[in-house]
Length: 216
Image (cartoon, helix red, strand yellow):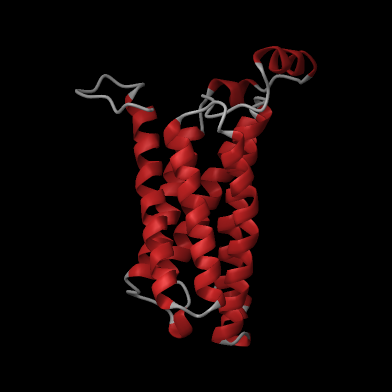
């Protein structure tokens, strides 16, 4: 299922004429897995910033959030990214791949075995997080611009939330403001809820359920 495609129907047909087929990837749809991972990872990071429960010393992300970024978000998004790219869904696959890297970068920084939590000061850790957030805001803005002509409104809304989250985390960590970081956490929670809605709307469309969730 395409969220947004990087090719017109004619362009995609031309590409498929020269690209070898991958039966496994074309048979199964991994997009729902990507949105489930995005929902879990975003909600975990958002709650850890808003609530601060189970936080590590020096304000580091809790191990709960680190584990969910690795086991759910980055893995689910990476699988979906590869599947979408192999099906010539360039736009969707690129988005999933970029955000798989986003969650993996947090995993690398906040994983205790890497030693960064002990070698970097709290301020250095904040500045590192700030740079990552600002950098990932750039492709997110361009992804949003790519959906203006066509695409679902809920995808545009999701990308706007992602832009807000990246900018708020970037500013909040740069100026050492808990209030701004908390605002970014609320944006992340909203990203999680929106991602779950999209995923379950797609899942329910394949089942004989009492109700359906519309995608608009």
